[in-house]
Length: 66
Image (cartoon, rainbow, N blue to C red; front, side, top):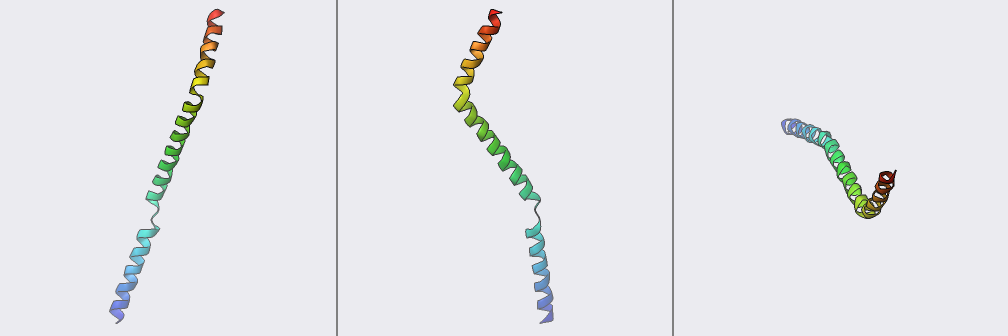
């Protein structure tokens, strides 16, 4: 019976070691942040792209007139 207990305890220690490893979690969090930032940039360009184009076109005309 004590052999089974020792084997079970080793199994529990191994499982805890596997699930306590957080190396992959950091990479996943960074990839989610990069994806979210890219989504915000695309949404901003889509929403304000026309207005920015008009602004810079009029600015280029003004600068060109100098």
